[in-house]
Length: 408
Image (cartoon, rainbow, N blue to C red):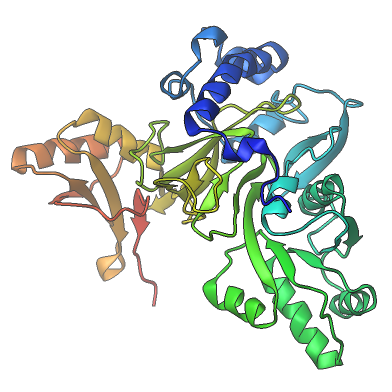
């Protein structure tokens, strides 16, 4: 049986990059021509000129947290959807609220690829315990499973005993949902004396797939793989049998940028995941997910040749409040931009003697004069005083603001 979903997964990396960059100008044109938001944001941009990653990096980043205000200003989708009611199949609501459209195409969220990599095949019965209520989780995976040729049991969330009974009666081959809920279901089955021997495959998402949980599932004969997807973008990346990072989906262009900026970081450095979606209904360009990750070097041993990321490494939106004032990663990035002598910086917030204090740790060498100039910039941009400390190297964890205050 073919181990790959399609020929796109094993393309020569250079061929893939050329084909993605050839599609990019058309996608920019489509977004600009068919959405009010990008018509304004890209008013002075010639879509034909956006034909490389360097050109793409000059476009502004639209971050997820901005959607709430945008959608209040222009309902329902903040001027970002290219399709109207009737052409859309469903609309969902995520906390915020943030509303997400779903187009009518088969496997709109492109999750069949991740399911296939997890070993799920046509003819399998898939138990889906993602929510079907208001949020798109259940529908994301159902669409992919049905496109793959699977049958789906829509378990949804909660009703643990009823779900376990259904699993014992129907004997599904595969599970999709959060890893923690799968563990709860299996433990409930033990408690009720029910057996689910057919369940050997799982594609999990929605939370970290921690090694102890992975091992516990494997001990029961369930081989679990993880998918990285969002309600806005659908599938971004997925785990393969190589179990070395997550392989990026074929329909997205993924960048890793320094939090608070739109500047791509060097390969291997942790930063924010920014995605350009090559889709017609919701053509998001440089969408900042707010998640941290990093590019893994080389090609996956499984044979898939696309970029790989390390997986979820935390949140990029590290905004915090100091002495009643919000401090944003964008402000720290602006400080760094003013002083080219420093390559990276991290604001460390502490509260000695129960009083908030800020220290900007700057990577690079400097003297008292430079420290004073940086401190002035920090005060001007944040309206707060802070000390400056030079360090040889900052940890590669994507943190721009580290809140280390203790409230014991």
